[in-house]
Image (cartoon, rainbow, N blue to C red; front, top):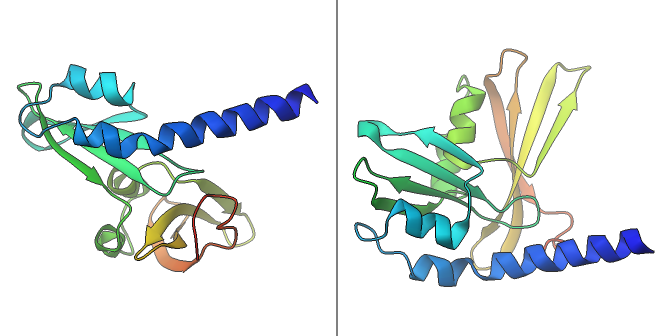
Length: 167
């Protein structure tokens, strides 16, 4: 029974954290907020990527329970230059056959799930996202053994009630 209590507590804590994102975002102003402000609001990033012109890009993902991933750009002067939610149809359209796996990760953030298909020598990465007005969807990228995009697909999320989304 103790295991179930811990799992329920962790789910509640995660959902509470996800609900705070809009408030955190509203408290950070581009060109004014500093790296320290970003870390104070969002914590340690999942990853830090090198960006153009000496920029660093902080990855804050909300997968698997959430439906958003954030990339926050910090300029060479230590100020936030951009904060964007990256799980969007516009970004999905940038994922093209032949693209490297690491480039997809830098574009979309950490996926909610990775599924190997050994018989086909492929790996599928899934991201949960919301399509307006409030439809829970899954975007999938299929990779070859040499870590290149083969194809992509989009489908309705089969478990929207479990992830807080709606159909």
